[in-house]
Image 1 (cartoon, rainbow, N blue to C red):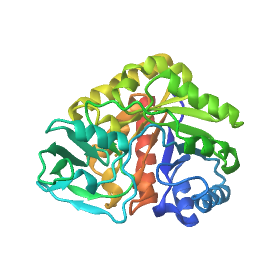
Image 2 (cartoon, helix red, strand yellow):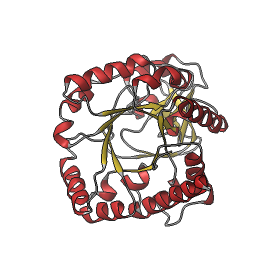
Image 3 (cartoon, rainbow, N blue to C red):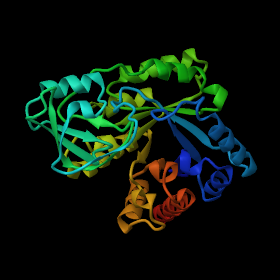
Length: 332
C-alpha cells in the first residue's frame, strides 16, 4: 500500500494562516471544505489563507469540496435551540425540509427523527398542539442551523445535485479544487451525473469521491467503484441508517470490497471526536484510526475536530502519528 493521506476539514477554528501552517507541519496532506455550510465565494478568504499557508510550508495539498447533494438538512435558525429530554415540541418549531415535514405529518406515532448525525433523537407523538404534529425529545442536545436530518425507514428520492452544486462546480478550478466528494451516493447514475457536470465545467482531471452514507450505497459499492476515484466510508449518516452496533461490520465489508477491487477508500467521521474540546484523544479513537489503516484505507479524515474544535493542529498530530505507527506495523 502507498502512503496514507491525512485530511483535515477547514472552518472557523483554522481560518488563521498560522494555524493552517501548523496543521501542514503536523502532517496534513489535504483539506475538505463542506459546502453544506458555506460556498466557495463565501470561503474565498479562508481558501486563500490555505493556499498561502501551503506555499510557505512547501506543501501541495488536495482541496476537496463536499457537495450538498441529496443530503437532507434543517434550514436556517435565528438562534440555536436547546432540546430537552421528554420535552414535547411542535413540528413547526424546527425548519424541516418540505419532504421531511410531509413525511412526519403522515407518520404514525413512534417514527424516529435523527438530527445532527444522530446526536439528537426525536419521535413523532400525539400532540396537544392544534396546528400540527408533535415531536417528543428522546435524546436532547443543542440544535443549530443546517444540521443533518434522517428518518430511519424513509427513502427520499431527491436529485443527486442541487443547482447550487452545479454552480459551485463551474467555479471549482478558479479556487484550486482538486477533488469533489458526492454525498449520499445511491447508484452509479448519481456518480455519472456528477462526472458529466465536472466534464462540462472543465474539471475532467478533478477526482470524484463517492460517500457511502445510506443502505443504497452500501448494497451497491461494487457497482459504484468503476465510476469514482475513491470510496468514502462516511460513518456519521451511515450510522443513522442502521443500528449503531452493526456499523463496524459494514465498514469492514466495504473495506474488503475496495481492497479486492484495488480501489482507494477513505474512512471518516468521529475519528478524534473527543478532541473537539480535549487535548488528548481516547484510546478507542487511536485504535480506530490504526485499524482503518490496517484494513487498507488510503486516506483518513477529521471533520469538526479541525473545522470547529479547540485543538485543530493537535488533532492532525494525533491523526498523522497514529497513521505512521500503523504503517510501520504493516511493514513488520
